[in-house]
Image 1 (cartoon, rainbow, N blue to C red):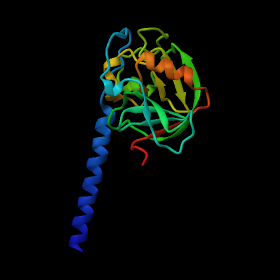
Image 2 (image 1 turned 90 degrees about the horizontal axis):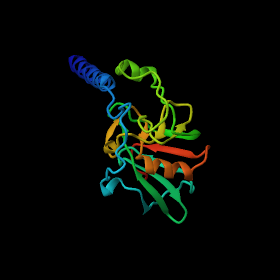
Image 3 (image 1 turned 45 degrees about the vertical axis):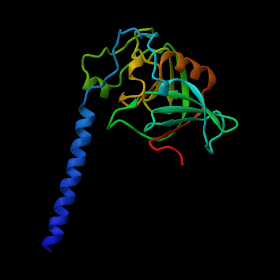
Image 4 (image 1 turned 60 degrees about the vertical axis):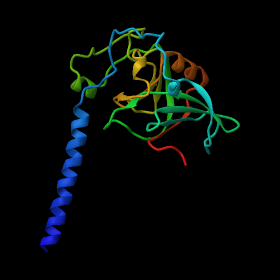
Length: 197
């Protein structure tokens, strides 16, 4: 019986440690959202994060968006076993997610209303910011299902390829405008934490 109690105690301690780590991650302030900062469009992305056409094997139909959070790439599936690959910024530890959604809305130079959870973490943020070059959502936004998450631009191109957001997926403004023009409302979006096998 004492071995069982020790094992149970160790299991409870491990679960408590995991939950406290998740809570600590959730309490970290968001990075990369700087209202009023105008994007440096001359910033040159590392080749890994630059838009390019790549070979890509998938069972998803052309026109589908596949996001790989571990790779920090967004793929727009094309015919013939190819995809347009964009470098993205993804959610930081504790804010990554996966699922299947559709694009439910699209906006050019979107307004930004930070969610209440973000305001709690960063009370200094504005409650509303009109769209424009200094807006953290950048040049375009595509809204994902009924979630608070979006695929959007950024006024911080240096955050592409990093894990800093609260769960949204950010692209440099030129890339998000390119993607925006290629996909309609209703587009299927697959968010994966692991690459497709």
